[in-house]
Amino acid sequence: MGKEIISLQPTCVWEKFYEITQIPHPSAHEAMILDYVESFAQRLGLQIVRGANHYIIVRKPASAGCEQRQSVALQAHIDMVPQKLPEKNHDFLTDPIQTIIDNGWVRADGTTLGSDDGIGVAAALALLESKTIKHGPIEVLFTTEEETLMAGANALEPNILRSKILFNLDYEQEGDICIGGAGGLDLKARFNFTKIETADDDIAFRISVGGLNGGHSGLDINLGRANAVKLLVRFLKFAAANYESMLSSIDGGSLHNAIPREANAVITIDAEDKADFIEAVEEFEDTLRDEYSRTEPNLYFTATLVDTPKKVIDEMTTDDIINAIQGCPNGVIRMNSMVDGVVDSSTNISTIVSTDNYVDVTLLVRSIYDSEKEDIASSVESVFRLAGAEMEFGASYPSWNQSNEFPLLLNAKEVYRKLFDTEANTVVMHAGLECGIFADSYPEMSIISFGPTLKYPHSPSEKVNIESVGRFWQFLTELIESV
Image (cartoon, rainbow, N blue to C red; front, side):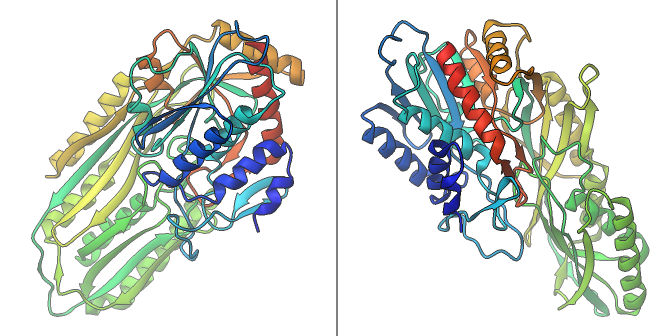
């Protein structure tokens, strides 16, 4: 399973992508993939600049006769999002990704594929290796931890890139040329408490919600998908009001930039309410299945009797946690007023983790406007502070906005038109790209982002369209030759 993808076209890209799938490289664990890129460049005799464990720059001289052309930078991130189905036995730190060819797409066997941004990395490596493509000086920047802290892009020293043109290879719809992206800001709320003794007559249930599609909290935020943490807390508020339930633990989600697919809580209720409570859970599942029949066909909501915990979170803190999450905005905040289907601003409750002393909630705020990002974050902060939580502002990255009429874009659109006899779309995306950081550091640099067609990144449903990879490669190589 997996190696058959090297027979796909263009083989120079798919061979590299296969090699990438064999090397574990989740965010913050990229040492092996960095070594792979360095060894690859050394074998080709190319110049290498390695910024510790944050990035690698590989420089390739111009082709013969092209020495006077402009230098072009290509950029891709080498980390991937580690997500898997609950039943899948896979260790992202040791196991290779198992790929499957499926009706015109490549996907993984129960895990994320890593085509975000493995295909961009593979294309950049193929370009470095090519002896036939005519080009001016090229420098390829491979960054780490894009999916978490954008650490590689942020660690880049000033003026280390020589190019005034940059192609970001981290876009997910072939036929689009992206010239803008949302900025993002992480927030963490912490509820501290001291647990109290469980009532003598109480029994305990594990409440579980799952089977959800999840997905990228930027690209997929407008698809109407359910957030497992929000669904769980919705029921917990009902249970607290109607059964005087007490919360013992609550956990859900796993990544700061993914829509949570599963969440669980252990709660206690009076033993006399057992039958009525189970019926209420079944009715709630029916309600959710009805509400999300189109977007979440595999949704489940269950209650399983478990051993009664000796202690639970006090009633006031339980209410504070539930009310803060229930009241916090989640999902699309505002759509773009000028471009149909484009999200301007959103929030995503990403994870919730409980211990014996505290509950942590993490959120990600995104907006195409940095000012609105800060305003929404302030609103979220207010909700949680009013509920008694400690608040911490985490990693932030800027939005990226360019004019829709600049020479690089016009040239790229002309190249696309000649290649495929159709117009490329000029777009702004809601997901965060490292381009905002590069634009801040290199204000005179012209930047565009493009790539093949990916679906459902940041989830085990992630897949990449085979035909679009071929068109992406054609466009990239022709565009390089045109500069």
